[in-house]
Image 1 (tube, helix red, strand yellow):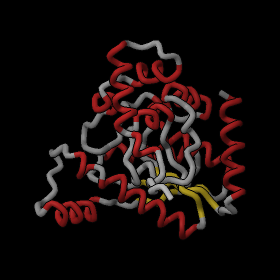
Image 2 (spheres, rainbow, N blue to C red):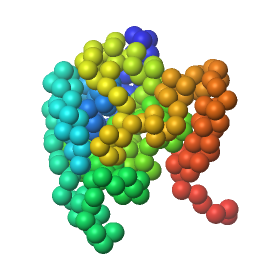
Image 3 (cartoon, rainbow, N blue to C red):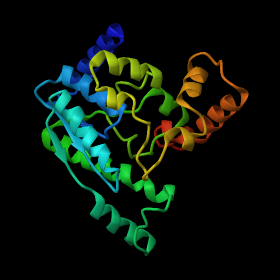
Image 4 (cartoon, rainbow, N blue to C red):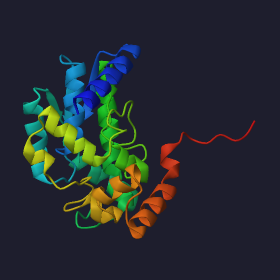
Length: 240
């Protein structure tokens, strides 16, 4: 893991310097991916790495965990509660009040898009880059919101599957509570990544790394990947 960490840090430093940026900005969700990402950023830019905590009808424990990560790596934070603007936006679009018990993905995806807007506000003010937290497992199957958590400048852990992220987290000193936490994109209360994808991260990682997985898991991964191809490419242009 040391070699992996140093390789990523070196790459991140090069991109940071090439962009002539003054700092790095990371959204802190309270999960393992953002914890690993901010720890890497802190090593590259120790004086100007900012964590942004953005609750939006979220589990209150997530903000507590995000603050734990910030303290662990001595990263300053901005906390922006997005509940009110999210609720207003949903009401404007749907014509009815937001119902937190509803599991409507078209509505839930507004959350990460509001967070993207918030991150770029701070990045622009600080002449910084927005550093994303997506890992290879999620990128492979398109488990991210287009122009939401997918709207970033850099993806330093984008070549690591989830199991590798966990190993890197231990090496970097991420608190055990964060490493052991159930993966969730936080789109609604009680949301579970593996349930929503229909495949466990262990199965997904095996499919990506070795192909040694069940036929059902392989079929699920292939279907998710194909369905999300549009998320992984730039907007299409017509032929000249």
